[in-house]
Image (tube, rainbow, N blue to C red; front, side):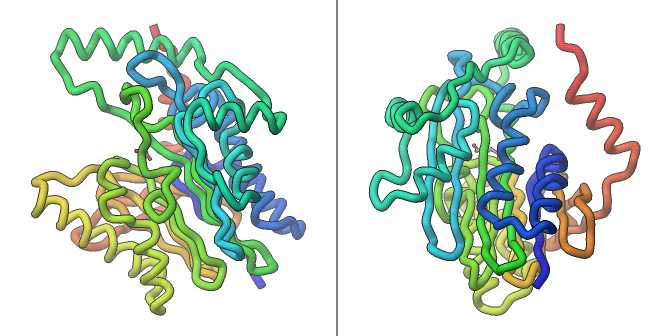
Length: 316
Ligand code: ASP
């Protein structure tokens, strides 16, 4: 039996590369996905997840994360948690419990403290500068403050057919204190059933949660629809519905993988993602919407170099 992993955004590359080695060596899905997500959380230049994540309007980094086990359907999630190093590990720990599996704010922090999770100030100087600059720009140009968000989400299948999914994000840059998006919400930001497959989402949480889109993709795969068709159908139909009913559809991108390791991607904006399988080393792809379909190709060296330059560009 093969293994596989699919993840949102270029930022997942190092984590997926490491986790796919672990999967190759026979480690299990839950351990591999936690490792992969925590590597993204730890890297200071990824500005929408974990350490270095962009703050809310009060310049506080509030993080959301979830973990789901596709065998037992166990879920753990945290939202609006501050000053802890790896929200995904806290979410995974919560998934072991029968009650109180989704904790927010002070309650999540109390749980993390009592269970020995490492505290860390997650606000970097770079994120603080970005926040200050944005504040000035919003005032000067009278802009909407909300520009910038991305979630790392992954679906993982191991050699023993265990599947997991997990997400982690700092959410919407400049969000109001206490704002929670789709990422820690079951069925919206993520869902997995080891007998079918899993999906996870990134984009404007306020819109993703209007359609419970990750569950919808898994449900369609459960009806026998191929991952690529399932995810394209969900994205295109739901984007149209939003435009019909609300005149606007926010950015929505979803990755999915079924229990055989076949995968799919759907998006209504330009979107990068990472895939590794038994046959393929971890690779970055760039996807785009094309009518009702999503097309993708491997990221070029120029694209990868430009990304590297952009995330590390000095900020005044
Ligand atoms: N979905 C996340 C949120 O709304 C952000 C993102 O994935 O871009 O918090």
